[in-house]
Image 1 (cartoon, helix red, strand yellow):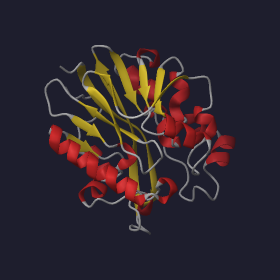
Image 2 (cartoon, one colour):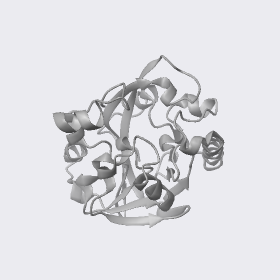
Image 3 (cartoon, helix red, strand yellow):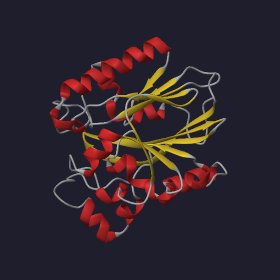
Length: 260
């Protein structure tokens, strides 16, 4: 039986960029607005946070903003993130503090998924061994080493496993070396399968299109992960959620509403 009690999708910011960063080989010249999301899962055995968004300091402090975003590697500029979109403020709306999160599960370590980790130094941080190794080697330009190079309570994993009954880590490599998705079994509604960046957009899922950025250009690995997630969603009768699709996000219940 699932230990999940409630589930919140949380908007932590937005980013505008060329669609080809989400859909490999197509979409050039089309600018999309993408939500930057985290997901809070309340269970009978504590609270789990899937992803932690961006490092707010790098967006608002001029020197850091210039160093990380205002350079040729980021031609579309920094993400947009207001103070009230920071996770500590989002949690406060629920009557919680960062310390009330027991476990952080990182789907991968790109800047818009692992950047806010400093607010959760107390928590156990789950990440795949392949992902942490690739991130520390700066396998691509959107790993920011200081996002995850601090004193954290790493729980470095391999393969698929159950975090608690009703929350299962699912391998979905391709976008990055050790990308992970998450299957969440709700107590009442249909399960939710969070694709993470295995599928930015619903288009990635519907047409089985790899993300624009693939680890070592392994488009085949990314497409195989999309197909496997779709099959798992069918088998478990789960809703499969893309991660950076604004229209899809807006079709979900708005924060602070929750799923149960």
